[in-house]
Image (cartoon, rainbow, N blue to C red; front, side, top):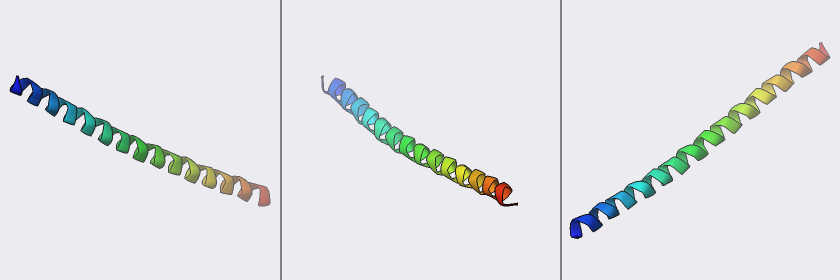
Length: 54
């Protein structure tokens, strides 16, 4: 019985860590993606503006 509860506790800890780490990684990847998109948009706008002014 003790071994079973220990196993379930360890499994629970693993799940919590997995979701915490997963959420953190997900947030970081979304942030990086948004930064990349914003950067690409700025470059794109700058190129377009450059073409307009030339």
